[in-house]
Length: 415
Image 1 (cartoon, helix red, strand yellow):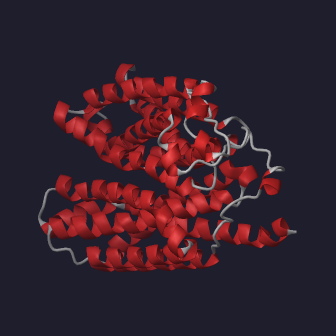
Image 2: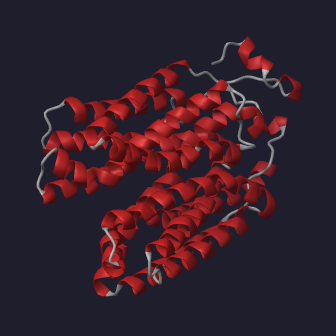
């Protein structure tokens, strides 16, 4: 009876999440604004573009805090707040008259607004579909990816028809309305499944015991999963951010041919989200992540060892983007397999900090050690370690009794 009553909530929450995620994904059109902002502020593009690194870091930090906000205010209220802050901070960004104001408004505030809504709404939505966690994840994160593609055309049109300030205002208004309407459709997932409701749920792996965040971070599995996630994010975000430059300066392609890499990445990224998200409901999720890391490894090795032309370059970056999109889609469900659904937002939130670290790590290595090749070798090393981790990591086990939290996994040799 209870399951029957909550079904409309499942679907309205899924619809609201897709709508909000589409709007939140719009921040990935930021590169369109680098040149106009550089002209307006009379600053180098590289310094203006750094605002996106700050945005990604703020997004990851806010994501890790969003679970606490949801506990206190509920998913609907936090999503409404996220939408209002996103609209206001984009409007403020249009008035930025120097780099520090840009870093504050477009970096810290936009990133915080986006991160607050992104992970919390995704985790909440996944909890409504315990039998189809991968599919629910694919729908939500696919919408986030589609948002970056859809708003690319919206913002390009606005920039050509109106000025920079008006574009920020219209973008902020559209995104704010979509997030607010999406938030109004959402409901909080049930806090705890009772034992007799959990029985019929036949997930691919055995359902995990419920781990609190304090218990989760004491397991070796948590740290292995965190390293894998950081590695994929670092590889994906670095290549996505500088793909055009890699094409021009490393592969020596023409500007137009190198620019096509943006479209190749968008399609591969979305393909990874949909294909691996759906696959993860049919195959054990750790194996899906093993496959994903292997694909990224092939992509990075291709950049280092193949005789690159336009096709082999597109193949290499498509592998990396496919792996990145697929991994961030599968990971919320994977973390829930390992550590339970109840504290998913908090547990995944800490792992998601790897997204923020990864967003700037590749750029720092490139600037310290001189360009693409050292960064590619670092990525190759991390991916090799991550591949080994995916092959040896096993689901942790502990009894429902809290006293048994740490000793039990070692007994089963589950690292």
